Length: 144
Image (cartoon, rainbow, N blue to C red; front, side, top):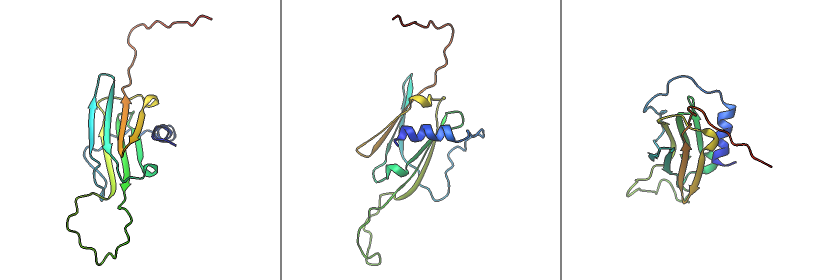
């Protein structure tokens, strides 16, 4: 099951919460996943470094009428056979453990067209905006 299938399954099986999302609040004991976000007229892109994260445990969901994206997961320290008591860090800059990130989107997205890809430890989410048709739209009939 890919990212897109996970997102669609989560949306179809969970009831959409109607409460207002909590801004800039994350559960205790979680680090924040760093992201880059940009948009065009048609869609929004979210890019995140997810090196060291087991993709199977990465949880991506959309809630609150398709305008809040949540990313949850865990970055695990690689298993290295070393006596823990003998280990002395000279520098520790990497973040290990559980992360949680909630992003309020500028408008609703079309969940049926979300695209999620991972390449070289980088997650790229492409979220097309939901566009409501205004005015009259001509429907072409295919001729046999």
